[in-house]
Image (cartoon, rainbow, N blue to C red):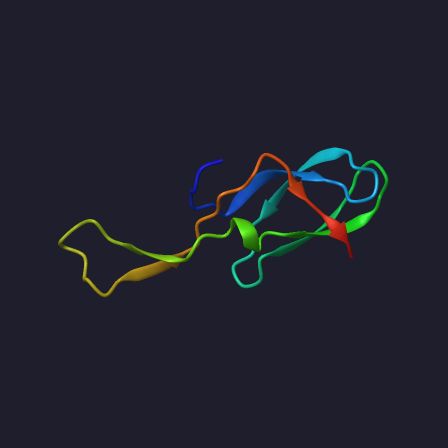
Length: 89
């Protein structure tokens, strides 16, 4: 996946226990780049560390000159691999 701004996204995870792949739709965290996940096949709970896929936050600015220049919205960009590994919790 390329670097885009997301709020909810469908991600593919690899279970740390049974090694099967599964997909979940999640809201991406803004403060701490980790997700608690549970494998639907073996019910193992795990943690997906998203920090390696987080790019530096940028400041999104309004394109119109009519908008005040101080209106800035921080955003986080992500670049995910095809499958995100998980670890035991």
